[in-house]
Length: 185
Figure 1 (spheres, one colour):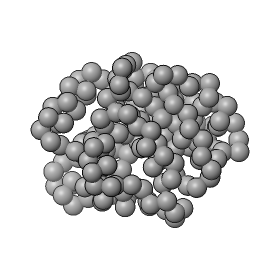
Figure 2: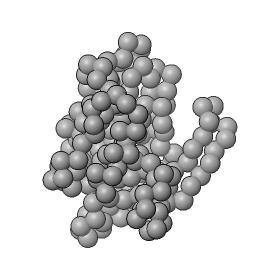
Figure 3: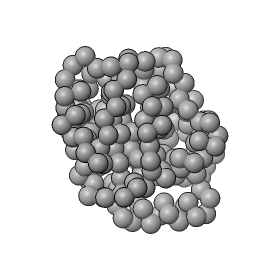
Figure 4: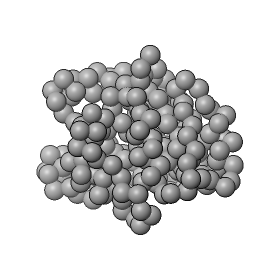
């Protein structure tokens, strides 16, 4: 079955976190998602951990160490879903973040010609003891690109990214994500 949502995870030396990220996707109990793990030339145990989870719904790709932008672009080239989400190797999806209700909404958005969807997010410290929840974006935030709207809180329609040739810059400086977000909007 073709996936409807492709989740792309760039990872580099993420052995401390990558298994939790993978399990947070696998725990969604949705048979319409695929998880693409793009290892950006890790020199720790990230490759071994990722390979343990390879399956029909989890694809592992290894690249040379060319940065997160390159890894995300590689992931997009492998994505088979109608929608794309990004999840870094040290991030998690909360339980039931991806539900059949979300798929119904995405199908409606797609039929209405909507290419970009904003979602709520939470932020936590490294031991997950302090959690800050934020609501989904309001129209005035979307229009003005409030910094709270991080690129990983979006779902992107793949066809729109392809049509607009929206890709990540492949240099290693910080904030390539904001540039991607602005190009996608």
